[in-house]
Length: 215
Image 1 (cartoon, helix red, strand yellow):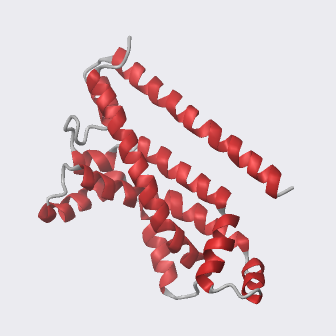
Image 2 (tube, rainbow, N blue to C red; image 1 turned 180 degrees about the vertical axis):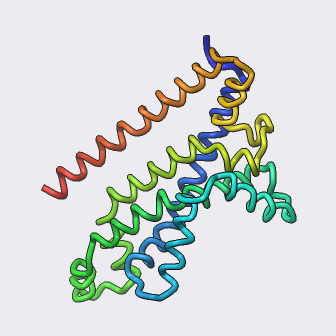
């Protein structure tokens, strides 16, 4: 038996949120991770701690404070609010691997590019970023898959509005709560198969990249 129309709607909304969150995180994480990897500023440790907060705080704590923060801006129970919450909650899963990748690059490739006359921005974009491509892809994949499974934060700030904020994780919880186990199984299996289909070609591509450039 196929998914119901409501479950399809939840699945498509979740994919839309995951895609938007991943793109936003990559755009934010590239310069931030570069700064964290290269800077010796005292505030770097404070920024690292703030980025890592979602790893140690319960999702409901983050969701509660975002709920209060969004209250005066009309962002609660909206897709935009979900996007902001997802970006903040998934940030360490993208920033930390990318920071490690930039750190592993070292300074020698950049020094060589500087000797050849490349300006700083060009050295970053044409030397550093291509060298961390496997880390960037892995970080983006982590951000995407983590968003697919978000529950506590999105429930707190988005609620359960069909077509607006009702994501797969919330729909799945609702099926289990109402003892609709067949619907829950179909939705969970669909998400599991989708995750495998999305992850497999990425790892194949990473393996080929490593064999081509690192051997």
